[in-house]
Length: 407
Image (cartoon, rainbow, N blue to C red; front, side):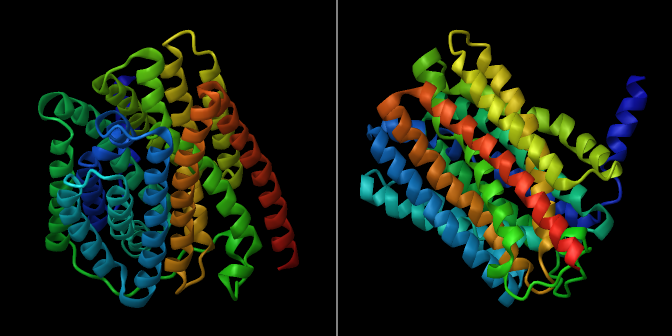
């Protein structure tokens, strides 16, 4: 029985082109090296002794830079091609990470973080557009899941190694490793993957039956962007407020926090691809799946209100992980499927910008609420955002039904 289960699991990974596997490899290397992010709020608060408000503003700079980078990455992908954008973004951000460790003032870090994210997050929409080129139409959702798997497998290794590096040589080691892995990843990509300029037709979905003249008039897509923003805002609490909660409420070390965050990546490695393959075979409506993902994310924060028992941290991570598995691959696929030919960069830019905006609001709002009212109020507010996302999913389904009826 175990052999059969293993065989079925491996079958979920068949059918991908060589380039998709290389994209997954460089994504893993890059994300495994992204050890700064899970500990950034902790580094700013405990090592540089900034206030909660200052940490929040630095995280706002992070998010604004990410938004600008996402917009530039999408626009340039449509103009000059995703390949050049990806190479420039990762190589330059690797160099900038080396420099960032030497900046310790509040305003210096605001501008430094803004600058590095403006360059670094040009990579994300370009990478999504690249999947429209290198992945076969019939397994594009699974290709998205493979990339997410690489991201989360990298995150599973990264925080754990990051915690050990902090204990061994301090936070500066994280900046050196992060920069080095950015450069290593893009060198592998440039050597093994050749630029492919012709973009094949994106597989049409029922939600894309209508031709959209302007992205700004695509009402269902904007409702969808709010859903993506809301679920992403909940997810980013893992990297902003939760590490502080672990330490201040339960006294966990950086290594123990790293292990908890790594659990998220391990669960995704084990369960995301089989679940995505199963749901794709059943042809379940993607927005319905995102609806249940938002529900699980909301529950994951409500359970944190039972904060008298440390085991609730593990339960919360497990629930939000399955919410993430339901939400992100299928929202990603919806955004790609909605984009008209030739506008993939614009659509994926706005999609990734919704995550960047979520990072701004998630960190600033979360830290401000904690500073004034405590952790319990923050968990309630975040859970309520998940409920709002569910209501918007219902609204989006109605809009899409009306759109299909008229066309």
